[in-house]
Image 1 (spheres, rainbow, N blue to C red):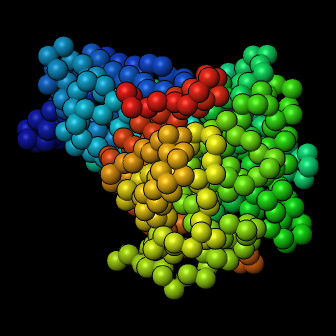
Image 2 (cartoon, rainbow, N blue to C red):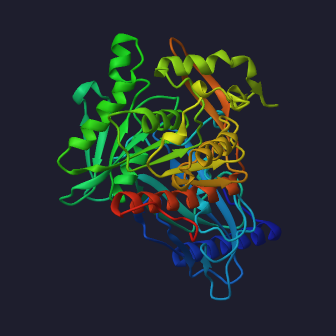
Image 3 (cartoon, rainbow, N blue to C red):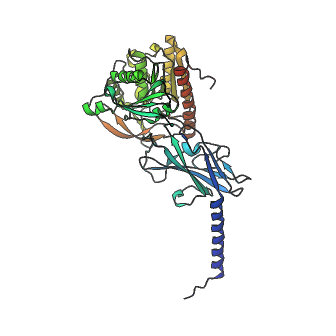
Length: 458
């Protein structure tokens, strides 16, 4: 049996063959370079696409499979210059998940791939392995279906929270649920007690990154600790003093140079301990997206109950996302309902997202400043306030989560809700990068240096 081809059909086949030949040639010649291809998560990289035809439209794409199995992607649209090159650090993205010249847009604009379940938030839970991100270049300005397309070139990139030589040590001493991260080298090092917020769990990635920058950092679980799970009772204030002592007495820690860093509910604990504890003597404190409003004589359980008493002030967005910022508003005038920050004797850095929909961080910062001015210790205060940034101000290039599912930890129940954190992606990402740089400067100045940091020239 013979097969006869019509002239029109033959022409199409010839065109397809030439098109495939051109594609094969591009696939063979296109070069994708990422420098450095292995580095810390807060380290910038350069992405270059080279040896493609001048004027060729390209999509540069990142794909990351999170530890929970969900895929995240980001992409930008580019046009190769006269030398057949695209430099993501210098050339503008014409569309995609970000636009303009954005060197790290391929990371901070990562979002769940189409079809993913709602409410996802990207968090690295195993800091002993890297984020493995695949960066690829595709012909044309593509917007979907990347997994079904053949890229011109791809590179696997590793982003680490733990620098080489950082030591990770689980801590159970004194009933703690904690992990100590020690920088490489003999030490001793200044220390940081690292507290996350109301979701509980032992979250290690920020402490690991702090150790990568030279600080012995203790990540502490204080809401879902082993003690709490075994007894059903929330930890007392002495739990934090125990954590401080463990850090202070470690042979590789400078016991007189310790800071606390808290985010969200971690800020409440940090401010209370800094102001009232007879054991915890801090060299400085960093408080991100939190408030000083709480019953000052209350335990962790009583503070959480105080928040819940105002649950009738809960609001919901048009998408039915929970807004909790009004629970602590208006800022009380009763001195028993807010930490007396006038008692602080160490430098304090407040980091505020002005679009925080979870905590009244902006209003709290204003009141803290007024209280410290009246007490005569406002020289210890530095406020970093970021318009259009939300609640979850994380290390640089962590994707912005405007809203996500959140499991609350309270005095007897655990409820999953969809929380509105706030923020606009570009502004929030800028805030994360700027705040992290200044947090590191603040910690270095106060823990390695001799006095309070000045951020006015940064």
